Image (tube, rainbow, N blue to C red):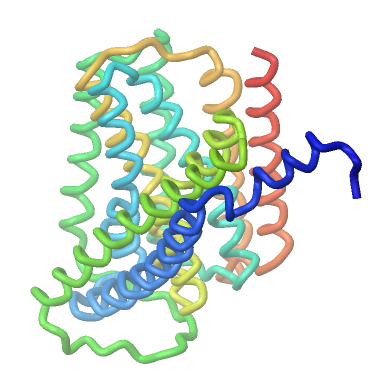
Length: 341
């Protein structure tokens, strides 16, 4: 026990009894996580049923429905940031989310279960992602994004959507499933369930972020730490919850489709929308840190998928740990550089 009265006062000031609102924040945090996992479970179930109903590859459903749908938080954050005169947040949000999707979210998924691969769909998905990344890198070469750059990005995204929508039924990946999903539900009802689940997923993510930031502020955590941890990961919570649920249900085609689709949408849709709203200069850190990290993560995932195609799956364990460790290293570098500024 300390004899310092000031130290005692400082410790007492950190108790819940001195902060009645803390109970509300903790309750909101728990409710947000419960709603997050429930809505992710409903979304995956509905998406799996839609896959059987339409007789298309689970990868396509993961790409179009889960990948683009769970990227709505990034789009909202970037759009509002650009509207309020701070469009630079859009590019950081997009690139940071892409790195988070591959290194953290896919890493967590690989720690839970192996991910099964489909040669044809993966080739096309990765080619589109690499093309989108290359287009983005070319447009920011002049260190500025403007209206016409945003228009190019969004038109490219529109072309991809039209192409994907015209694809016919594809060969399904032969992977075990915990349950037989009924394709009997009406198409309209399935679409309503998917839309409702997406809305709840986004709202629960916002609830988790709000309550976490509130708790951190009450405990005296700096805004920098909050931004680098809670807010950065917060916009990726829908992808994280969805991918964990897909993995537990052994629907790994949906996992990879979600990751690749989300990254394509972030690169083209999120940055493109912000560029249409407001032109902005590209920070130097994007060229020397964030873009190389995102590109390297994408390249490593592609090489890993190609190497593992012979066995038809990416094994659980080691690669997941490496991805997560790489993400932690990236966050530490961002933190260190931010402190030095």
